[in-house]
Length: 115
Image (cartoon, rainbow, N blue to C red; front, side, top):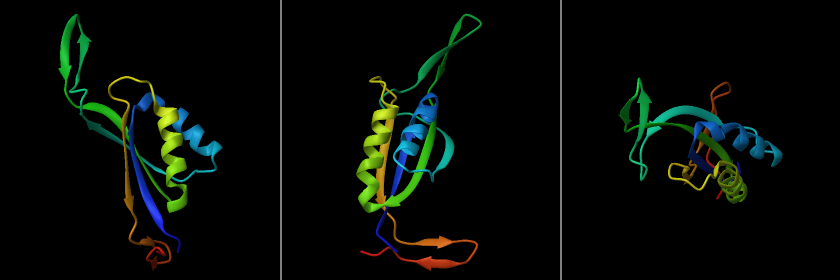
């Protein structure tokens, strides 16, 4: 098994289709997508409800997890950054971690990545 990285991106939900399309254009299709809530520098937003501002301190985001070959990690990061960017607070974060092993549930095939 080749060396792999786990790329985890937290993005705005409205940017998901653009990010997915941009990754597909690079030949990258596999990902896990989760709805998450969080906050960072943005520290929340105020929504209007019946004329009143309601503070929301945990903002809805999407989390994308992509296990990719180590050599593809930089391409994935650049692609996500380009497609998810608005230039405003809350554009998100990208984290990269090494993958120690992968187990295929159906076959119980477990292998450590090659170094």
